[in-house]
Length: 79
Image (cartoon, rainbow, N blue to C red; front, top):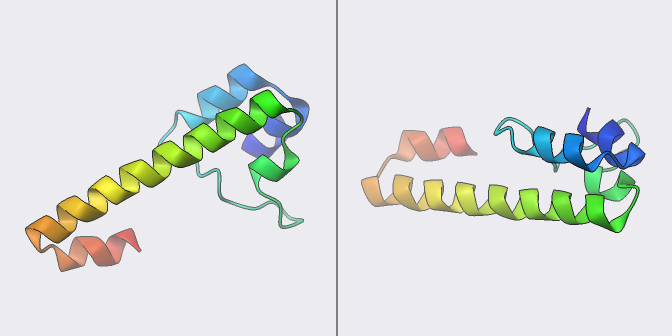
């Protein structure tokens, strides 16, 4: 769904999909392209890039929290 919305340039739909925690903008389609690579225009690209940066920040914070607690099992699940 995200790839299609990006390809069609549907910014509100792209933003809605990316707001979902389970939506992973780094996944590739059948041709090996990410949502960023199929984005129709710069606005869609910016929305995808912003979501990716939020995802990296969230995962980094979680990783630091798990390390701080010494939670090896949680770290294994993360990766």
